[in-house]
Image (tube, rainbow, N blue to C red):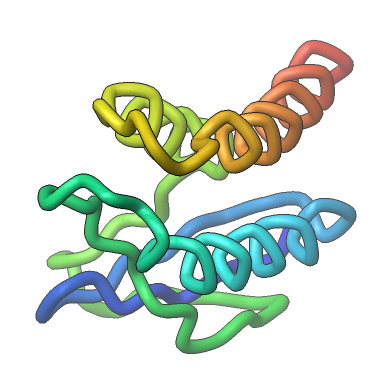
Length: 111
């Protein structure tokens, strides 16, 4: 298992993901950051910034929890699926998010 540290607004979020799929999530965030300004809607979703990735994580503070990777990606998919974008081909971003989501669902079913 790998852990991703994300900066969301003024807070932090920790996401756990199998090592085999962490690269895809990091690459997805890079792509989303690259494309977010191309959306023509005024209410663009805020994207977290990737701060770090690590193999081990022990949270000392009870103010934080570790989010499951599939749950996190599913939330991300819902945020982008609800956008009312007419100009930018949002489907390409959704396809990438959904592909990672499907892979994580498959892994979960296999376990």
